[in-house]
Amino acid sequence: MTTTTAATHRPRIVNPHQLFDLSQEDTSSLTHLRTVLGDGQLFRYVESDRESANTLVERYFAEHFGKERAVAVANGTVGLRLTLRALGIGPGHRVAVNAYAFIACAMAILAVGAEPVPLDMGAQQPLSADADALERFEDRLDAVLIVHVQGHALPAGQVRAECDRRGIPLIEDVCQALGAGSPDGGAGHLGDVAVTSFQQAKQISAGEGGLVAGPADVVERVYRMADLGAVRHEGGLPDWDDERAIIGDNQRMTELQAALVMDQAEVLDETLARQRERRDRLRAALGDVPVLESAHPAGDAGSHTLFLAQDDSSATEFRNALAARGVLARVVWKKTWLEYGLFQRELGGSAGAPPFPKKAVALASRILSVPTSKYVTDTAVAQVADAIASGRRHLAQER
Ligand SMILES: *Cc1c(COP(=O)(O)O)cnc(C)c1O
Image (cartoon, rainbow, N blue to C red; front, side, top):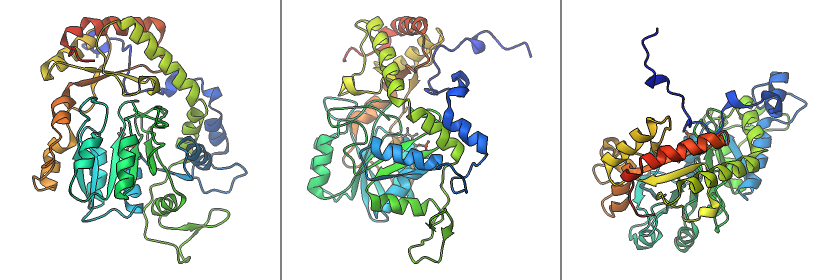
């Protein structure tokens, strides 16, 4: 067909969905992937001279998050759900979760039969969870799930302290913010459990994949639930006669995914440094264009620069202005999870009442993200900056 217009084939300067793009990598340097392709063993529990790539991933991320142990799972959503179950969260329980978060977070809470309780953004800082509101919640809470946003670590110190006061666990969703640092120690460090994802749009990508890091006993329960409840003995054979076996599910990750994850994990520091350098260059080129600052600007992963539009229609105008110049900006989450009819139905209309997360509901549709992957060239950075400048009249002045 020759009827496609030039516009639909406009070269994309920035693809927001791929911080890691296999088609741009030198595959000869992907040593874990080559090893797995070389021996053809795609399942983690196989007889092989090599250590499974899944095991390497688990060891790496246990250390990365400063936790006792980690387990690789099929995806981040399942990681959240199995974490909640492993912590004993179920029917009758209430879990506070950012109102401004991916839909999977509240869904995972509902999937275990618990009730998601929306937590607003902090008064000073859109990229935060309202820890003061958390302190004021009068009803019982059984856990808190805080969700880091687009490479930016939300400050977690006060949330951690409140969880300690209540004696409840803190889970951190680090799916979008692997490597984002902060004075608190970085995304995933303050929580009892950190959950991440290796889906296409994340900092490390294997198309799909996920991981849970935390205390050994919690991780062990997640492990079993994701591995048909089996107890694995030396050599990897499953044992369902062992009295520790439970009813489980298969939510394992393949060796191909684990190898891709490991190849990226080993260069994560370099990738982060490169992203931050791209971000700094973009910020310098933007001059005084208002940017939505992370609470800890020095500590974000450098992967996404966020902007606040004046209102909903200016968000669309901003996006269009950038698209006309080949830059894909996206509204991160067009509304809070509680505004979806499905949550209203599920929660019998009680979602968010009270306390209603006013600020998150007002701002969600206005927050836009422009990524700076490691592949963005100097020329592209300049073009992205020009595109953003062309849309700046649609941005709110607050910084
Ligand atoms: C992607 C994502 C998830 C879910 O991860 P999947 O691997 O896609 O299931 C959960 N929370 C956040 C914040 C995410 O961005």
